[in-house]
Length: 448
Image (tube, rainbow, N blue to C red; front, top):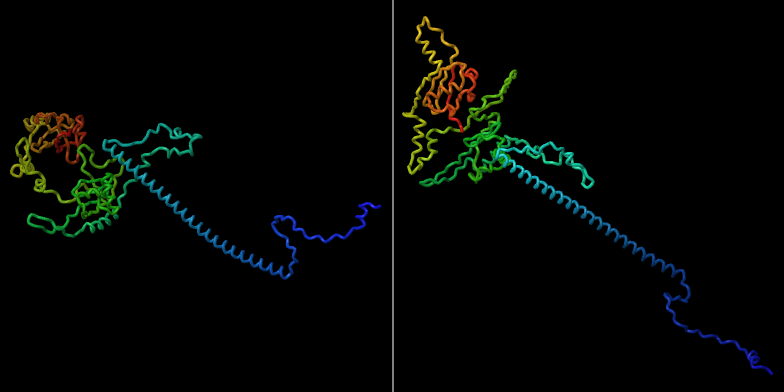
């Protein structure tokens, strides 16, 4: 008997071909083709197409890079130009700010100096007892060390340089200003009966070595601020500011160039006349140097002077004539005014009279140390003849005059017209003052 298992082994058959199982779908990134491999021609064509595409892309990118480089270069140039403009604006604004600040400080300093000058004071600076280096010791907290010379304001460093007058520039600008002001032109002037043509009278302007004279005076030195401002306006090509209110439309100038002449102002009686000299010194001689003290221009006549005075004034309810009394005082009674001569009694005069009483045989020789002084009073009405010894003093002269004048001797000054000198030291003798053997003197009311 056979088992069922053995029968299975005898009846074995060949297996059937398996059908392809669809299987479970799996997501792959790329499906592998099971087709046949491409040929060499297909591979070459594919490679050629890819190379063509790559070459086109390279050319387009190269062109794009060139465009971007040009754009970058243009933008860089714009940035540089804008940066330069910005720097210039910053520098110019900083410069203008510093100039404005400097001008403001200079004006403030000038105003302070003018204020001090009004009260007769002069700024002389800080005391130099403290050292600048002690006040400016460098500390770790502070910045860079400041030089001592730059730490404090120095009066001499902040003042303007000495005013320089350019005479040629003034003459040139005056010609241009005269043309603008209408030199030689006539303008219509209204009169009581109508009108007439009248030319503008030019302003006389004289230029000297040390100052100017405008109109009929007075003399104005170049050291005066108003004179410097006037000439600076002319040198800048403008009419002087001080004439703007009086001549708003301008006025011609008649310039007299006397730049080689030194103007000497009339000195006071109590100042030493002439130039200073020393023993052994040489007197300076300069043929090109001239001096004058005469104000240019026509002199006023007596009638012109009187016409400038008011005809009358009211005082204490009464109308008082002004011109006629002044005319009489200037002309004197009958046009001339005589002065009386008074012989003052002095010991020297008494001795001379006593000598004349003695006969000529017994008469002693006349004294040689007697000085004759001819003194005019303050108003010129009296002339005093005084005989004095060389050794007598000015105080003795005042005593002799007081006997005839009846006034105190200290209410007047004794002066001389030539040379201009005041004899104020009462202790000096006539010989010490050089009032020998004769002299002409004047009495002047003392200035209180």
